Amino acid sequence: MCGKTGRHSLGQLAKAVIDSKKQFFNFKTIKSKPPKMNSVEKELHGYIQGTERMSRFDDDGDFNSFDDDAQSYMDAQSYASGNSGQEPLSDPYVIQYQNTTTANLTAILFGYNDYFGSTNYGNPTGAVITNLQGGTYGRLIAQSNNKFFKIGKWRFQSTSTNQLSITVTINHVDANGKQYSTPLNLSIMRDAYQQQSDILDVTKTVTVDGNTYCTFTLIGSATLVISMFPVSVLSGKAVLNGGTNLNLARAPRLSGKNVAPVIIQTTQDVKGITKG
Image (cartoon, rainbow, N blue to C red):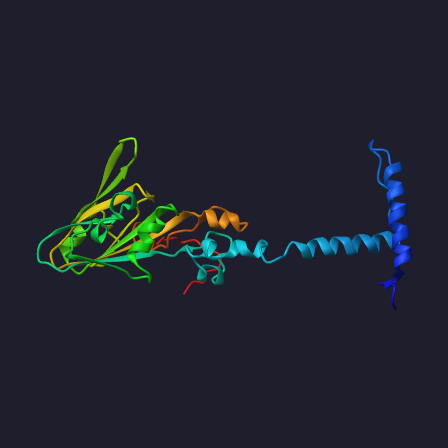
């Protein structure tokens, strides 16, 4: 079978290429249809297309867009539950602050450009900071300087009641001297439908970059866990691998407004529901 390719010989395929080129150059570019391909030309065309399709899936090809930059902020379980038509669930950053003293301390969250080179990242030595998701708090604060992200929902958790009544001040500064602060008063953020005394869920959008930091009071001997759910993350690496630089996710419905069941009384039949 040497010298054969499929059902036709190499000579026939070569002749078909030459004939097709002749037809191409004799073809007028006005609105006329190209000549029809015979069986030999169709077979050759199929070989060429197949080769081109295979060449797209090399080691740096399309599959690399699905690396950690595209998935690390999302919960794959949302796909398993049949929610592939919407954005996946956000994978949170979870940071714990522990006050090892009996005095109140002023704690700082983020602030790469102001506090990354400072002792304990600008926090008092009595504040112990732990990344509960693995890794270190230093990695998170460094990542905030090159992978900007937007937080869509917060969860504050502490067994010290007063800790959940503090005011978190969100600060943004710029090299041109401009700065502004936004207070987030946790004492008025509790929703009537949220019953947990040691947990407070807050829906507050905050964009974090190297110029952003939060300050708050860490009550003496208290431990505060802050969970932050990013809903969008910028990633340059994802672009280099063929993906998008803006990875989107949705914050989970933890608690809050409109979570309580709504009961509608009616005397009419409801489709799909059988009366008892």
